[in-house]
Image (cartoon, rainbow, N blue to C red):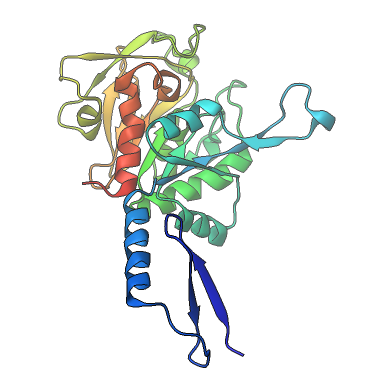
Length: 291
């Protein structure tokens, strides 16, 4: 008895049945095979790139039994969807083989915001008790970042994600801007997340400048919710935006297809401000393989 494999194709009437050589049933007609190939080609052309979004465990207020939930902010998901990507939540894992399997499933990555990277990852001890680490995220996101960049997989990294990008590839952080750079700006705003409270100046002739479409003298209004920032930029990366106090607000890897980190939170600004939405559109475009 021959093994039978049934392949259903959306948008094509009927099913195409592939049977082994011993099957008495006839093979599909050339016309059926042609329709099948045309359908697969059309489906591939319109496929939405899968964007893996780094998730994390948290315990919501009034959660039943105090059990943690693994998730990501809805703003991250919506920003990817708004840009035309298919959002795919990635729960924290630390097994190297499983991380590689995860990377096989996605076309691009969005590293999300959150708490601090452990200073031990860049050879330091915490400067004070404002440094609150999340070891399970570090164990997942640091190797995930290294492997993604090594594969030249498109990556957009936001806030903590930008810091993960820096540390994973050999850089370091200012652990606590208010205590280490007390004369700097306030980088943890009290205003609503969708409000902008300071500006950044984007470096000329960078991918970030091309993405945002700004001139070298144009300031970009951003929001700000961080107390850490890139200190030592890793090899292979360059700083691409600065706050008025000199704080590095973005980095990128010129030699990679798309490896961009920003310190602000464009996911909260994307619905109403095209300039910030372009970051997600560019990630999706690179993940689709557009030139």
